[in-house]
Length: 597
Image: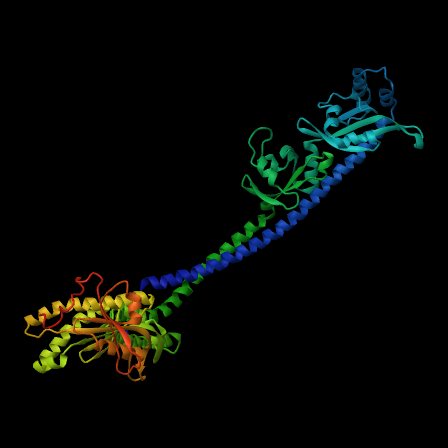
């Protein structure tokens, strides 16, 4: 018995283990940084979302503040004599009224960009030279048009690249219970890039004024990087369409990440939409410093990890190499090898278990070798994988039982020497067993000159196995003709066989004791098959009625007879069958009869 004590040096394993531990160290450091960065980013995003909501409120407050300021200016303008004259003096034409607004009233209110008036019928009486004029605004702004009902209205109008915030103030005269409308005064202030820059200073957020999801004016790098007009933009109109007014969305501009939010305060009043943005990367600048420090720690950790892992790899490699060398011997079917692993740790236990495994493999190999002499290797593998093969006892199931016997063997053996008898049987069985293997049968037992075989369905159905068993019987008769020719040439007498087949339930499994057992089948159907075989004439294949029902479309019946079989009360119907094409190469009735030779 060989004992392996030498330990070889395997370069890859140690370094693979070292690299694995190093990778784990790197992975832990990278994972830690990733988790920290994700948490820092999540916290920064939450803060930016709060800031963006605050910016939304700042914009709304500024719009409302301007509304209040415009109402004050509108009342001041309405209280002047010139505006009342424009609305009440029908002798003044439109050109004169426009001139009064432009040269007499507007210079006193330089903060206004829009100044106009309409009488109670909605006819425009005056308008400073700003296009589109008030008439065009009224045609498209129902909010401003509602001022003719006597209530203050506000809205927006766009001229070129600027928006103008407008207040429409009804001018009423008379006592409260008999008030009469003279007309409506319109005043407006522009929204310019300067105003957006002011908002940016107040909120800290980049901001853009939108019209139909196109940028009109902006302040801040999130929007300044995008040319306006017809030039292509980094944040295109389709992207602007997707920006939510409730949930901030992230987009990269010139390599920098920004969170964007849209502000639509009162769309029904004509107030334009705003887009606001905050830079996420600017908020996370300190993360770069954290990354640098962690990389330094990672370098130190990698060096230590390599050293420690190499030491551990050396300790683990020794018993692994020993087991590997033993496994190579076992792979070559050298089951006499044993391993010696010093120590009392898990590797020593593994060595003992490995030795036990080798012993088990040796025993199993012996079983397979013996079993494989009588069964096709693939069939043997599938049989050994079945649970009932592992335990004493078995399982009752439907199988096909095959039995063949040499006719007149006792008379033949009297004429032959013992050596010739054994030679005859060995030549006969060598051919017969090969046929059974080829047809996926299992040789269960030899009874003198007889042979008992089993065709177990395994993964196939009974009809297929029944067909395979009958085909095996036909092939035996065909092959026996050539066997007889060989034996005659060697001075041995020819032989003839009778074959019986049956299908039914039988107990299949290990039969015997724990010390001595064999794979076999038992049951009444086995005894019945033996009796059926006894009814077969030389060269005949006789099958029972249950088996015939499964193969009747695949055979030709030569004779059908009813007979009483020893040990069975009821008479049985039996069929002597052959191949469906009659005198086929698989069977010629009577050819294996010694008298025919």
